[in-house]
Image 1 (spheres, one colour):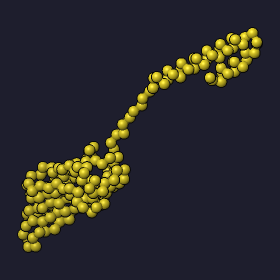
Image 2 (spheres, rainbow, N blue to C red):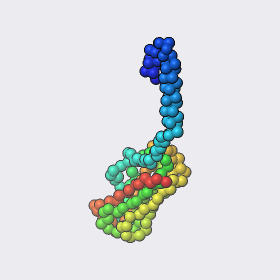
Image 3 (cartoon, rainbow, N blue to C red):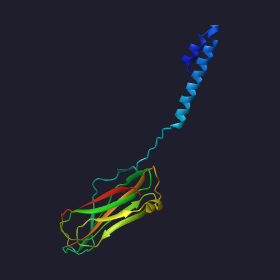
Length: 191
């Protein structure tokens, strides 16, 4: 019974009104019991779902690629290798994700005979997965890294997991000062 009801009952002091006071007290207990049982019979259920979250941080926006000739004959076009590796990129999520990796050829002034992108785990110092193409076309190259591959490479939920990206291209008949540009797009996917 609340404080107001107790105060009211203590003010009933007349012996003639004693029966009335008991009736009021019993009525209040009966009213409180009905209200309490109604709250138990009509529970409110609250439910919610924690959304999937995945964030990338660090890494390199621009990676300088180095060029090495595969042919030591000066003045001969030959072939060469463009290769570049990013700074560590951290992936943090609330469950083990799948990763989408796409290599896009943005600027390719001369024929590229081979292109590839490699994702390497710094925790295990191993390549997780790659995507390559020996096609002469400039179409995107894409792969999906399954959650199981991340787990094999010591992926830890809720912590930063560092990887690097390596891009390479084999060029035929390359000429000095031509700029080649490739973009890598990483996408975090719910597993």
